[in-house]
Length: 201
Figure 1: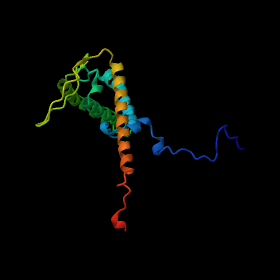
Figure 2: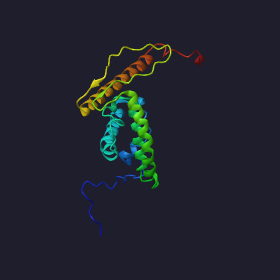
Figure 3: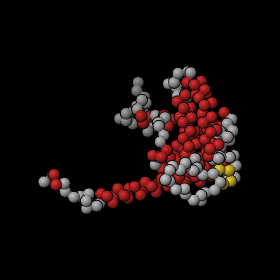
Figure 4: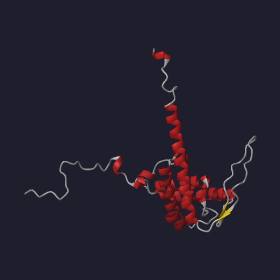
């Protein structure tokens, strides 16, 4: 006896391939190298929100890290973002189902080394639990110091500042992408771009 096909069922449609890349979970999508400076505005927003969620939901509640290790305004410093990203990716890898059972132990061992690097970076940057100052690159011989137009700031809401910084960085990256596209189109429309190659004659 043959049963009736369920409503909305298309017998001609092939079943999804569960082993294909399209069927991968969002956590698997995260397991890729993250080069922050090369991300476009959309990818940047995606990964910084994921990183922030991990810090708030997994790192802080479980490891009880003080502000001398993870200050509230870590999102304002590329160095701290990089160090947090390293630990985040390490945590994701340690919790992957294909990892061996000792991977989590190795992660916990490496956390202590990571804390030392974070403390050093936080102290160098001058981050506090209730204030922050902009990062200043070390001047090399021949480089002129820039005017200090961004003195230390005191902030009352970490969440509001985080979202404001993310939006500002999204806009900056979008503008840079548009400018790069405009330059590419300008070069392609230049008469020199369409000039005949003498070797073709």
